[in-house]
View (cartoon, rainbow, N blue to C red):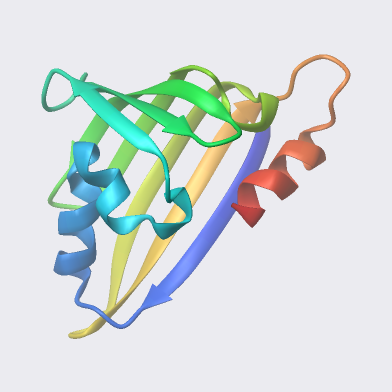
Length: 129
């Protein structure tokens, strides 16, 4: 199984960053690299599905598996259209307070690479995104 990680230091309170991430249907309001993308949702809360369409990459469905507000952790699985060819993809997003007005956001992705593709190829693309 492949693994990729990304971190981002932010000069905002952890609660503010978590509020944005916890809104599973609001991804396009806080993730700038997705300009020109579309998003729709089905359901609400844990188990809801968002369909994300990215220009040049196509559409995929992501299911909210956990939204732990107390610990600021979100877990999602991509059920169709894995990123960069990945299959059985699951991501964990978390927020850690660094001070009253600063936090670090972490993203971890776990995936399988399709036959003929090395995990490192997908990891590089995910971490670059």
